[in-house]
Image (cartoon, rainbow, N blue to C red; front, side, top):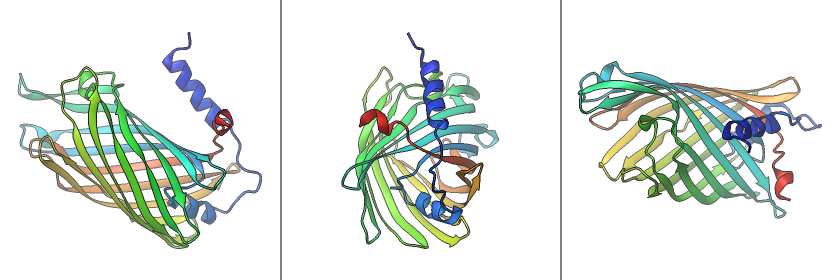
Length: 279
């Protein structure tokens, strides 16, 4: 029997082993395509994020951790020009702060977190209107108790926006609830990502895409200010998008939550070989 690790390695190898399209587009053309959430381009994004925390718990202001997220974007084109897009997010946490309520102090866990995903039906019209409808959820894959909830979650997601030659504007609201699993946590979480991106040319992008969350179980909100910068390049015959972002959190859970986040990401553009599996 093939192990989970062997399956994951084989899956990644399959994606990386694909080649770029024969007609090589310019970095500027690719940057504009990648700015569209409904892009037909498949990417393998790696995100490295470092967070600093704050809160009322003793020692909260001394906590920090680093997260590495592997987040492929896999579009499946349809005959009518629309797409089905699958985006898993596989997080690996380094020294995630975990509060011990018995000893009233912080410890930390390192390992795989819960895998998130979304699956949407995406439409981009000739006028530049972008919409997508689908589901968002998470799978309880955490390797340590402190890294996940031991609950399956699922809920609706919708995207609406407008794209032009020099900008992309839109919003992506979603809501998840727990639907099963061995954990005891009750989950009811609303998330809204608002995005505005300016494309000055030369493969550059600059904008803001904060993700606002509201936890209905605790009545706590997380509200960041966000700025991000991206540069698309062509290297080795393949487009790559490089990016960085900075978050400052205006609002977070009172007891414990993020105060700052700085992130860096790299995303090679690949051919989605899985398209041939579903034809």
